[in-house]
Image 1: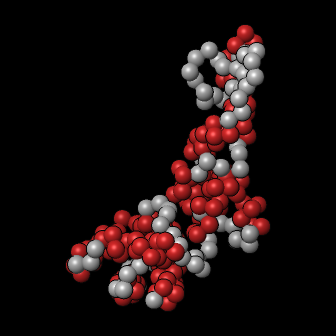
Image 2: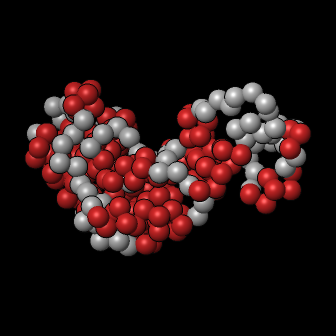
Image 3: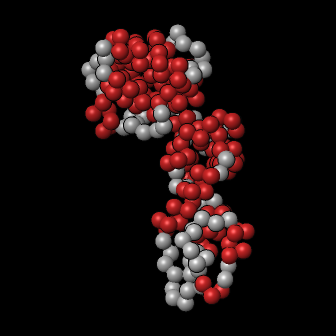
Length: 213
């Protein structure tokens, strides 16, 4: 799950430094700055957390398209039909939280597979007696919206509906996220909805209503 440039940058600084506080460097920069007199004679400390820090940086600065291509083999091995644009968009929404490519793959998993179970702690805390009824109304509202459910426009419609009904914003949104993701995690909810599309969003809402009651 580590990018080559992250490993090179990390390993180069084990026992050497360029004589300043700079840590993030390209290979060309390291070649230019290298000086044998700046190498330490003492043993180097191999810090895995520091390695993750480097990798996190290079994941953030990599294009979504490159990361999608790197994940393609494992996604296809999991039986997912690879759509480069869709995967890149999912990565764009989640990569800021990932330290490795393995974490990134885990974080985009729900964009390809609907939840079959729901986080028990979140259900206990967020799913109330009126949650199913509220999400049923929400599904009916979304069914009248465009198929692509653009993020900002959908957010405006849903929040206006919540205000009109006098429902608590958090009460509806937390259950909505639970229905789509299966847990209390993920990027901006309406960005998730836009990528999933209306049909998949409605299917996940209906399943949550049926399973959680």
